[in-house]
Image (tube, rainbow over the protein chains, first blue to last red):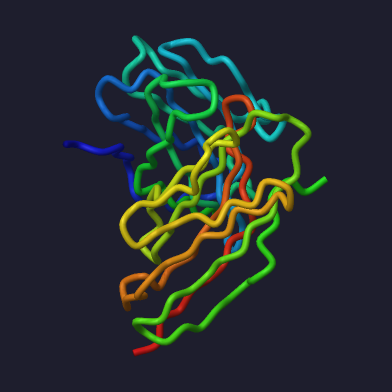
Length: 116
Length: 112
């Protein structure tokens, strides 16, 4: 049973560069989420897809951030013109619709971004 | 307003002892779901247990159980017979629409 996978696991970039992360959800999961987690904190919600539709975006997701989920399968998160404040762990999760409150989000290993 | 509060930043527990990790929440919605996750140093967030607001019984999953006190708005995680591999960060989270709202976490260290 393949879990959620994320690539790359680590990314070091210079300020001002663009980066793109990929997330492959558990097959048959139709919901996909992106979170950001800084050191010593709980994750913060960024955005949510149901199939290919992006249904919710956090105010944390500035114009420099964009996410896609073409064909409702894998998803990409792109950060343009990275800033040092973007340094964080980016977590992807997926779930299958069970009920309004009960569908459990399963997480990938995360991508740790360091902006120099 | 903070919706999930975990008051224990860190805990040390002797191996094989039971441990309780505290979580209180704030919501005016009568329907809600509460989750506990474990995050080892490797970074992956691992689902442990779920409690729905209308569930009649406290949730249990192996060595994990949830002490759910609805009137007090608390959902404490109990780990029985702790093991060295239980050392990790533990997060309590509440479902709000599509997203999870997270607490700040508790760092649990199991001593041999």
